[in-house]
Image 1 (cartoon, rainbow, N blue to C red):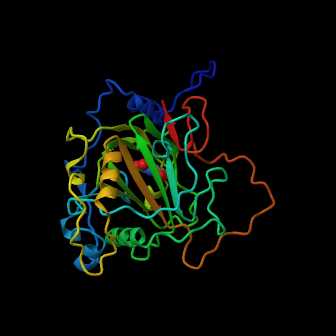
Image 2 (image 1 turned 120 degrees about the vertical axis):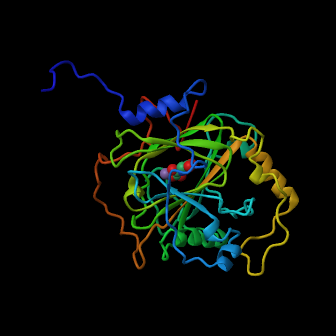
Image 3 (image 1 turned 60 degrees about the vertical axis):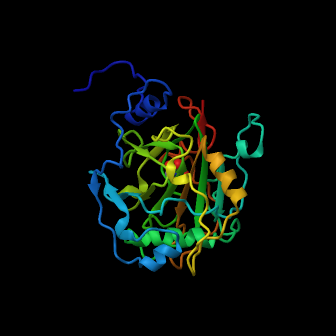
Length: 329
Ligand code: OGA
Ligand code: MN
């Protein structure tokens, strides 16, 4: 029987680990899973032809490393999918996104960009009237990745790009604003590394910690699509150089016929790689609506307080202070 006594505010297991890994000095990282030493190999589908992979700037699927985690069906971690370099800047529609404090340049201020159906951080919704065409190259790339993971009908409709520095983090949240959860989240990461915490269906379940390195793709689908997750920490890439070696090349000029990748000037490439010396970029691509679905008409009824979730991604929290979506020390 539970002891009767004063109710003591208890820090849940997820927050505890978040705080543990958030510590910049001295946190023991030996328990963090590194997919460069494989865990459980995942099967990929053979639906993506080498030609389509090539057009998207990808290695043939059979050369990708695909790993899963015990206890997390639907979570797939992909490595070695790119032929040694990332392919080009994605054209973006910049919505707002900056911190209130005073960094010096616009680039330093940038915290996020939204694409396609632009996510509204206040209402936590997407809507039909806040939309710009989703970039075709990124849609094609995401489609090939989804297809390799068994989601042939995935449509890239929204993207949130997060820009991190060594003092940034991303609060505990679940991505549930998309109306169709049967399609995966596809998350690409470039630049410096991070620790990713993958928890459970409830916010307080203890998460599993793993590294995400430059060039990794994480797919969250099925059971894992609605799990709580967070980035407590960004840390230097493990090679110990300013840039992970996969980014140290010049941009390819020998793009194949039918490539969806646009050429990128040497100057732009230099600017991107310089930025990534001290930054991490994550693009999480989403399908928002099921085929044939449309956004519900705005209800005038107030839903009332949201008790089901999460969204510490978007809320201020007295214990873990956040700027949305990042926490900064
Ligand atoms: C997100 C997200 C994770 C990351 O944008 O919803 O969870 O690796 N990003 O930055
Ligand atoms: Mn997320």
